[in-house]
Length: 56
Image 1: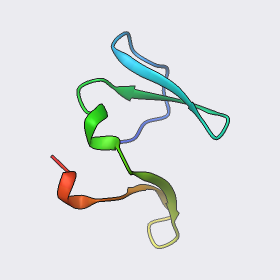
Image 2: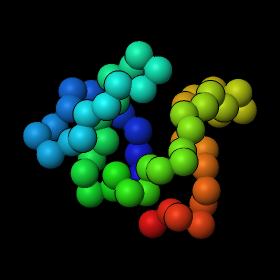
Image 3: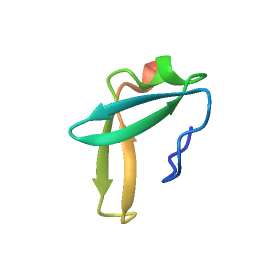
């Protein structure tokens, strides 16, 4: 699973979360439940944090 700053694609589900427009690939939408977007200081980047047991 990855993260990109890009325009939504045709099959993406588009949501507004905390006033931010977010596009989620419909093929992985079920894996994004209970995930949080966070900033990791060690890698100096954005990461998705959540329940790893649900991961693909």
